[in-house]
Image (cartoon, rainbow, N blue to C red; front, side):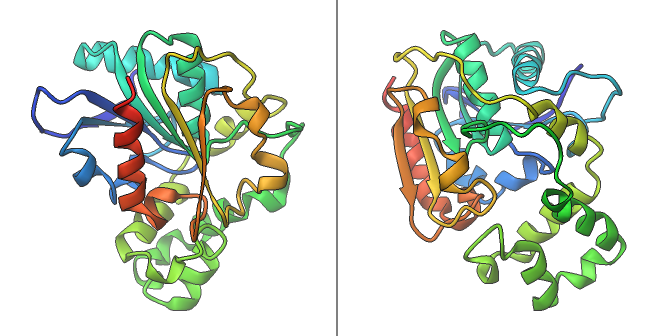
Length: 265
């Protein structure tokens, strides 16, 4: 199926860069870094099936490898672009790794922002406690526009995601809440990760940077940041004062890292 995408109108000579969001999120999650990235890249954002503006089709394969194939197909069919840089957050980071493993000649560089799939023991089933953010967003959806102006609600929704939750803009919080509350692909994508982890090989010719925040409560370091599962040549970074969405907490640093990684080709 075709995925909803957007392309920033920048210099046609700039190389293409594809941004892939995480579970329950949408392309809007990258708003804090798109303007700066657009100075160096033609930025293409993607909404995964059942996320953002992409519809969900029942029975669609939602495992990371299948989603990687769907992104390759969409970007080539829509824009005629075969080779590109890629940045992925959380599930999007795992998808990006699968893309580099499946088609290393097409991925110019890869930056993984707190990528999923690097866990020692894959989950065998859903834990209700892990879906609290989803149910909260669904429940509060009718009130989110006004409610997010209250410090108490923003703390409930974002304090576990970001150590800088009090500094997050209203737009970031609103976009994230709407994306989660409207996400029909949430559980199918979650199920697509069950019993799996990233174990494929990525050739050393693909420049890779993997970074995690020092305060990532979504993918904790002791169980979900197994360095041995990442490509051996990856540049592995841990960022201070940063949670599970580095593009929110440290946007300028993330842009710098993406540029540095892309320059290694």
